[in-house]
Length: 390
Ligand SMILES: *[C@@H]1O[C@H](CO)[C@@H](O)[C@H](O)[C@H]1NC(C)=O
Ligand SMILES: *[C@@H]1O[C@H](CO)[C@@H](O)[C@H](O)[C@H]1NC(C)=O
Ligand SMILES: *[C@@H]1O[C@H](CO)[C@@H](O)[C@H](O)[C@H]1NC(C)=O
Ligand SMILES: *[C@@H]1O[C@H](CO)[C@@H](O)[C@H](O)[C@H]1NC(C)=O
Ligand SMILES: *[C@@H]1O[C@H](CO)[C@@H](O)[C@H](O)[C@H]1NC(C)=O
Ligand SMILES: *[C@@H]1O[C@H](CO)[C@@H](O)[C@H](O)[C@H]1NC(C)=O
Image 1 (cartoon, rainbow, N blue to C red):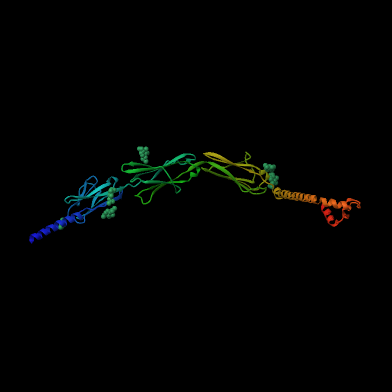
Image 2: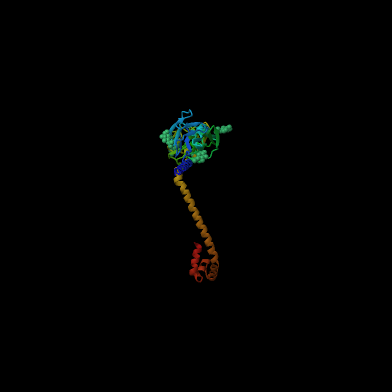
């Protein structure tokens, strides 16, 4: 009886320990991901433990902590908690070289181990844009390069031109455990690039929002001038203004005005203020070719305007009169032509009738007219005759 109970107890204990060994005495860990420079907590747990020691060792198989005892001299590594159920350590100021497979061991017979991978993210450096020539000259071929180093995994570089994305080249080099990423844009500078913002954006898992660097391109280009005028039909006595509109970078200055290839006449009515030439009261003598000229260090440009001062009298009276007379003459000519055609056809149709009646009354008539009147049915034919003589 006692023997039986004893055997039962042994069997029970054996089963229990085997059961615990299989289900409970397994260390549990989790993979850890931290950003370079941060703190990594490495936790190892055992649900059912009979005071067996836990140990953490690093990827190089060096023991870090054996229970609450520190084994490796590394001031960055500290104990957080050591109990029969847990061994947690922390690694301060994590570096990329700390990355790897860490092992938690439970010293049962046999030893049970679990591995946790520590991933260390390399934070990309602020992007730098190189290749800017300030200012760039129109027509230059420019290569802008954006570089960011220290990222792990490799960061992504994107380019934006005033918020519109453009594609650049991509080059990734490993520098130790991190990466240097470089992206370039090559283009020929146009005057439309003046003032355009080129933004390099660096995206990475370790960043909550992208790092951005922006450079504004300044383009120098040769001037281009145009003259605008305040009146379409300048007339004598009117106020008139010419403006020399210039584009160019640097702004082409000063603006030089000239007339008919020579100096501007020195008259009070004419005022020149930089880009503007004002004639307070137009006069026929102002007729001529006005020219403005300006330059910057990339070149010079000019524009011309031919001023023709109209006589307001010629415009207001004679001009429209001529047109009116011309129009009236044209209408009259047209109507006359129509009449001639219509009458011509009418005459051709009634000629026969006329001749027949004329013959009947011709004998006792003194002349041709009387003959027609005397003729039979002269009523109708008198009217016909009237028509002929209109
Ligand atoms: C690491 O553990 C400490 C102490 O328990 C805690 O304050 C800290 O937030 C933990 N850090 C991380 C990254 O889990
Ligand atoms: C574990 O050790 C503590 C003291 O070191 C002791 O009080 C406890 O009974 C032990 N537990 C087991 C299951 O051996
Ligand atoms: C832990 O990380 C390693 C290496 O990256 C991987 O192979 C493993 O599947 C990860 N385990 C878990 C539970 O995520
Ligand atoms: C990558 O390496 C090549 C060859 O060594 C070198 O020419 C290039 O400049 C490097 N690029 C970066 C982004 O460091
Ligand atoms: C135009 O100028 C001439 C000569 O200066 C002057 O005699 C004439 O009165 C002017 N005409 C008008 C409309 O101002
Ligand atoms: C003004 O110019 C027109 C056309 O070039 C010319 O016919 C006219 O004689 C000119 N008037 C004067 C006053 O020069």
